[in-house]
Length: 144
Image 1: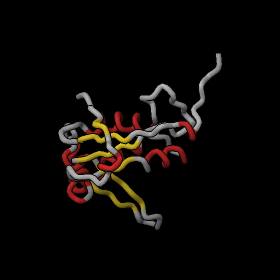
Image 2: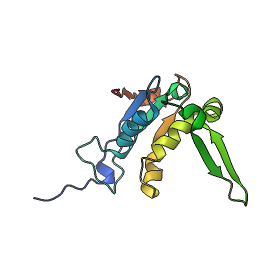
Image 3: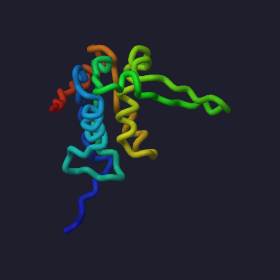
Image 4: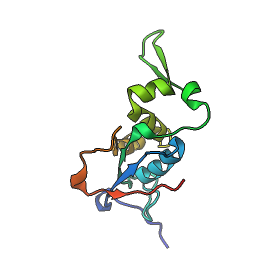
């Protein structure tokens, strides 16, 4: 018996929409990362992008537990000496709520060229509207 290896030309990609309202950030990110990688499919191959497109709406209504809104910090560096910038969860949530979800999902994808390609299939919107109705996305349910 031979092992099945998916070919990029034969992969059928679907579109899913996820409503993040009221969901915990980490639990939402794990389901979305699995869908982006294609781990929900029988044809999953680790070195081929077999995943689907995911649209996340209501990213500004995602929930974190405990004291994370005050204590959790996000860091970035400009590349220059002394260029480290730190921002709290609450401040980033008010400024750019999409980046919180993108950062959580990015940490659960491979840290290489394949992971960057999979992350490009993620579309995140702060409100309930999105411009991807033409793709007929299916609703992806997340169990709490």
